[in-house]
Image 1 (cartoon, helix red, strand yellow):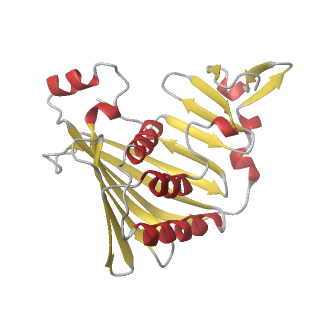
Image 2: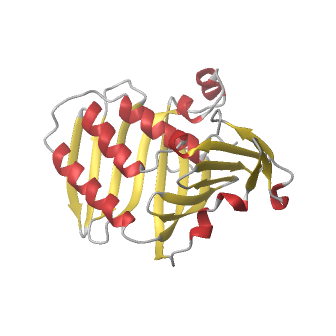
Length: 251
């Protein structure tokens, strides 16, 4: 059973970091510098990379319950991603999400995006503002490993990031979060327990096959998907089966 989506997973990251306990952490300032250099590395030139997410119960990490595969193309604040059956396009005007299985095209203004324009800056900002109970940084060859701990019993137990600090690329992340956060149903806790899921889940993500892209604004062109006729949004012929849901008033 598919229990999580790429967009939902990003929301979980934000939720966990916002739930952290504000404290003075010795390595926090160092981590902030690493994240800023990482962000700058992504902003230098257009690039693409592949992603894989796997899901497991906390106490049986070797038994994979679900997985998602996808890719991202990014150029500054513009990005185009595909994870499983969910496609996301973000440019300076719109945030477009295509739910392929349900044939729904979700439209929002760029400033109302369900995902932050700069997820690395978001992580840096939230950690700086809200804090965490612990943060340790260690070296593993040319890579840097950052481990962050959270208050016991909270929505997120811990997170770990592995970063290539030479190429300035994120290589992997691992989060231990409450299983109920990874499903959209209101009775998530009861359902998870009844179906044999642990209270906490492990979500591991890997980012690989980084490669440069030639600049091409058409990758993020909203006109590929829809056009506006008066005040009405209409799908292009290739997406005629989709129903448009406009999330931002007076878009």
